Every structure is written in structure tokens, then in C-alpha cells.
Length: 330
Image 1 (cartoon, one colour):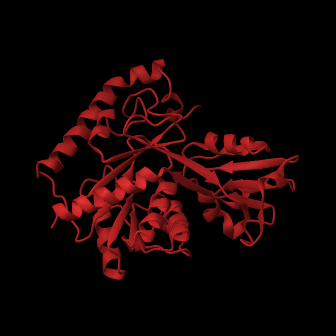
Image 2 (spheres, one colour):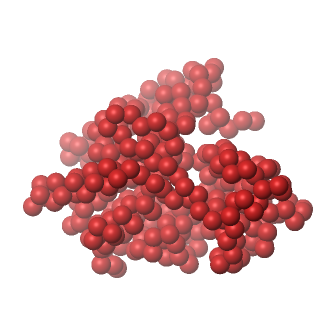
Image 3 (spheres, one colour):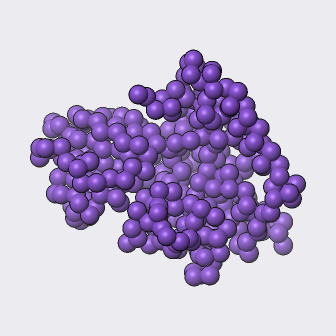
């Protein structure tokens, strides 16, 4: 039986049947936002600027590479950033949790460990973003916070909102959940500060982002790296437990690889059997999946890291917005 999200990217009888529920979901989302804006629900402001990165649709849009890019860019601009996130997929017995490169993804979530490994900066996770932010402020010397996937977490006050759009899938059939993939109506984009389009045509006032793949790394020995060309001419098992596995598979094909696709649900809790295919063929997975598979990977297991590339104007606009918020807040 097909999963519901299969129907979100076309107009079909099932989606049409769910449209009344979609209208109700949109109404609740709008009313919830109004409640925060009018003071009916509390917004907590922090003593440091907060940048929120998120999207209005369900599934992978490229937020994680963008957050990693923001951390490096802000460091070069003289800031000391920290990251907060929900810790989705983590099953910690209590929250908030501090995260570092050696944290267990089963406790704090796969994306959190990936970002901690990539950024090397302080990080805390909790379903309550305010609690996570307070935790990181108590434990680290940081002067700016990036909230990953926090666009709809209105309890945490923000100075800048960045929305990421999947340039290929865009907004699917245009409906809110459960008839379509939208968490909020498309009009929500009119109120964010910056819109980033991942792997697609950016509209007026929007910014393009491209994902550039690096050397393919071995899970058992990070010092072992190969060019993608070294995997051409052989059959590869491609593993992806992300929001849009097809993007990863298509990218490997664009690098000239012949692949056998193994798609898993987003944030899938991998076990050893999931990445063993009864042969000695190389297995290449995403970096997010690799953080969960290191403990039982073999010499044939590899992952492909990706880095975000953005126009120079995006960085300039970000710093201008931060300067304006600083003046506004005194």
C-alpha cells in the first residue's frame, strides 16, 4: 500500500477527498500564528539574535546543508553561533540534551549529530526550542542562535526567518496536510525575511542554493576518500533514509554510477540488516544516514557529503538584516 505522501505531488481522488481536512488544518495553522502575534500565546525573546531556518512543506528541502553553511558564514563574519533543534527521531529520557559529534543519534536525532559533526559549534535539542536555546546559552559562549526547522515553533522569538523551498517538488499539489505536503499556506512565505530555493529556479527576491558533493568517505575510516569516478563501471547499492530519496539517487546517477536503489522512510532507525545486501558491492549512503550506521558498517560502506553553495548576495543580505535588527533592538 502506498504511503500518503505519494499522493501529495499530484491532483488525485484521494487528495481531493481530503481537501476539507486540509482547509481545517490551514485554518488552525493561521489561527495559531495569530495567537502568538497578538499575545494570546507567549513568545520568549532571548538576549542574542535568533535565526530560524525552516520550510512550509513536509519532507527534505535542504535545511540541514543550509544551517551548516550559515554556521561557517557567521563564524567568518565574527559571530560565535550555536544551533538548536527539535532532535527529531531522538528518544532521550529527558530534554533538553546537549549534542556533540559523539552523541548517540538514537537519543538526540540523526540531523542533530550530523550538524554537530559538521559545525563543531555548541548545540542543544528539545521539542521545546526555548528550553534548548536556554540550555545552550547556559553552557556555551555564543552570541547568535540558529534554530533548525523552527519556522512553525513560534514560542521562540526570532529576528530573521529563512524559508527553504525544494526547487524540484516546490509545493506539491498546493494543499495543506493531509491532502498535500504544506504545513502552512503558501502565503506564509510573504512574511519571511529570506527565501532560498534548493536546486531550482529562484523567483524575484529569492536566492538560489546548490548542493555540491565532496569526496566519498568510508564509514569505518574517515581518512579513506574516493572520487566519484572511482565507482563508475560497477554496480552500487544506494541507500537513502531522507525526505526525498530520489534526489540522492538521481545525483549518484548524474555522477555516472549504476545504482540499485534502497529507499527508506525519513529518519529511519537503521539496523545492520538494512545495509547488508548479500554481496561485496559498495554501498553509498547519505551523510545523515551514515551517522546512524557507523557502529555496524563494514569496509564496503561509504557516504557522500554535500555542501551548500549560495550567491554572495544572500550572505550580504543576511548580515544587513542582522545589523538592522541590532539597531532596532538597541
